[in-house]
Length: 319
Image 1 (cartoon, one colour):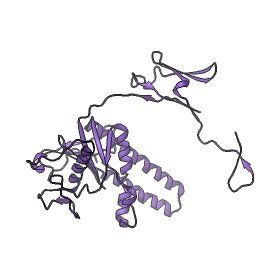
Image 2 (tube, rainbow, N blue to C red):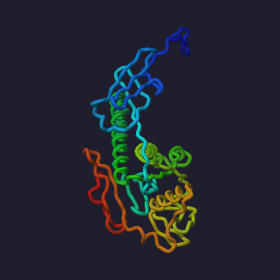
Image 3 (cartoon, rainbow, N blue to C red):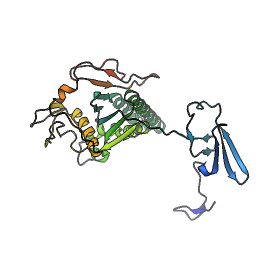
Image 4 (spheres, helix red, strand yellow):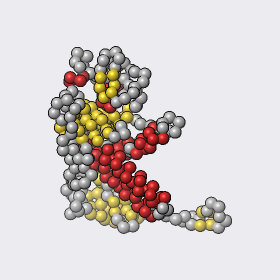
């Protein structure tokens, strides 16, 4: 190993290896799927044989192909790949908000995912970290930081898995949010910046993309454009969208979800919109309310709503 001159020092030091591993290309491996073994060529006439027969994941990966094996000091990592054709049944537009994810799909109606438990996790650990930091307890601060990260990750994993179970074979379309502009000191107030920073939209979008098909569109004017007539209002105040041209009155989150879905379909050359002869408020009578249970092995992820989307409370949602 070559020596390197450390920056700011006259003497020479050897580089330190933090993580030791070896990744083997497919050309250096011979996989026997019948015997469930992998033979890796270390050097000419010297091999290493690895078997996954009888392992806990044996049945789960049946019919899958082996990827590039990674060997570490204490374990061997065997990646498996499975290619399958997914028949898309629905395309859902999602509006990302501070306390909720609001979606729309014509066959399902409006979908409301409650993110308040995620905000609660953030707020609780912000206070705990602040107290630990004020007392100069670095170890306690790092402990709270790691615990917050794990609980947020657990929430997002449950949320993503719940969406896949609730809405299988779907394309989930999200806004391409610019987190820097949402937390900019020049554009956003201090309180609003703090609230925007709490919701990890990118992590949620990324995790969903790992377990389902996803798409993205621009977030510009999604909540200010009428989904029925296309009129764009200059300013919008409050939680309700009112179109001065056609008179459509609807929640801003629902308007944004419809526009996100429609914008994605237009980008894919599939024109879609509200029927001109029907009132959108009359064509969608069902709303799904979804939540994540923070405790338990099988979280409650949704509750069907009967009747209109307004004036109803969710039943049986985990929070």
